[in-house]
Amino acid sequence: MNFRKIYALGLRHLYLIMNSFPRVLDLIYWPTVQIFLWGFISKFFTLNSEYYSNTVGVILTAAILYDFLFRASISFNMMFLEEIWSRNFTNLFIAPIRIREIIAALTLTAILRTLIGLVPAVLIAIPLFGVSVLSLGIPLIFLLLALYLFGITLGLLVTSGLLRYGPSFENIAWASLFFLAPLGCIYYPIEILPETLQIIAKGLPLVHIFEEMRSILMNNVVNYANILKSISISGIYFVLGVIVFYISYFGAKKRGTLINMGE
Amino acid sequence: MFIEIKQLTKAYNKYLAVNKIDFQIEKNKTVGLLGPNGCGKTTTIGMILGLVTPSSGEIFLDNKNINSFPRDQILNRFNFASPYVELPKKLTVIQNLEIYGRLYGLNNLNQRINDISSDLDIKNFFYRKTGELSSGQKNRVSLAKSLINQPEILLLDEPTASLDPDIGDFVRSYIQEYKSKNKVTILLASHNMSEVERLCDSVIMMRSGKIIDKGTCKDLIKKHGRNNLEETFLKLVRSKDEF
Image 1 (cartoon, chains in turn red, brown):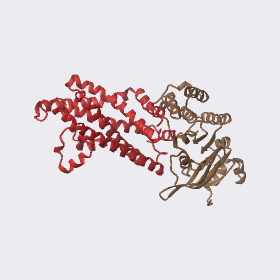
Image 2: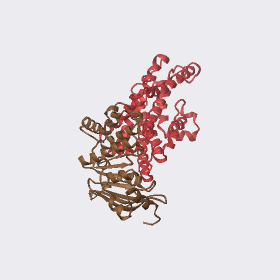
Image 3: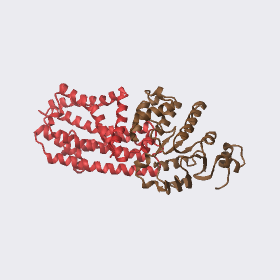
Image 4: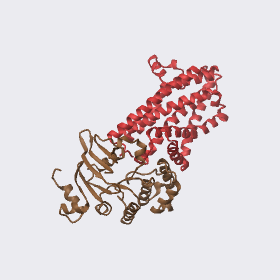
């Protein structure tokens, strides 16, 4: 790994954000809207639901964590799409940067985009709804790690699709997370799902992450084995995502799509 | 021989984009790649750059198969410019040059950007976003990017397409001047025959994925009994002959 090249590619995306105030606004706008929406829903449920009684912030914390996953994945996809939209794709792929360095650069830069969007929203939630994700304590770091790995994995799978099918795959980029959300049991316990779907859901890290989050907030119980399980599952998916990305890259070279990738 | 292409073929299902082509390029020479649209020029360039995997055949650089080099090592020796490939539009000119200079691992980055920018007269729009530039300005920035690493091998795909005669002449003169001062081997795909006559030591004519003739401009014109390269080109591409 050449960190100077990883830094160079990261810098390209940092300049892109710095050069455009509307872009920064766009990054902050959606998470903030989400926080407001789920903040009010959360407040309503807290007051009217037996399940969520005295557990102020469970839904809002779930919304924040889900948004973190969503932003991580979308950030990864967006940075890749930016290269296609700007017709810079060929320049990037003929530069002496290895594929693993491109993946590393996008992975590391995605965290920056994610945090630009999410930190203001998280800070707003504290005075407005009295909810802080920091109340999850140390386990929050591990839960975020599992979410980030899985978010990047989804990004890798979508970008693999972009390499395979070209820019027409773009719509899938936006839809990918909504597809998995029902199985992620973000706002409800896994028991709500039919048994068959429960089996599938347990194969995803999301269920373990959000079950753990609820357990910490509602019962004050931290189960590190469960957290480790979620990180491990995310790690396995991440490795699979990298493999799929490489397969798509070599497939794109075979089909000659790298040279004509554009708007 | 510096670059040697042997039986290079690219098939997309049953369509043969490039069909068993052979050619060599001597070090520090400029070779023109000519042919009608869809004849396989860009695919050939794509294969040399490693963007397209050949169906069969081999590419040698300094008598070593190009696949035996690590990807970053080989690409450090190349660069490419084409009006169909752009630099990030929302980044300023200097930001783009900085990013690519870093990606090519330059140590004397500021000096290199300064030198190339003075030569190509792009300093006066250094801080403008690349997407806001005129075609001629974008073209010069793209050329600056393609020379930032002082490549041993420069691939140019229609470098003066869509430029007005003045800017087109500026770019051609610059390539000529750059070549006289630097050791660089150039493969130039172009539809501009006067450009090819002016810049190239020899040309390769392609049609339907095959090489139909090659040689110096003078030799080809003489061989086909025409007055200039454009007439020779037209004769060759319109000919019904199988090559």
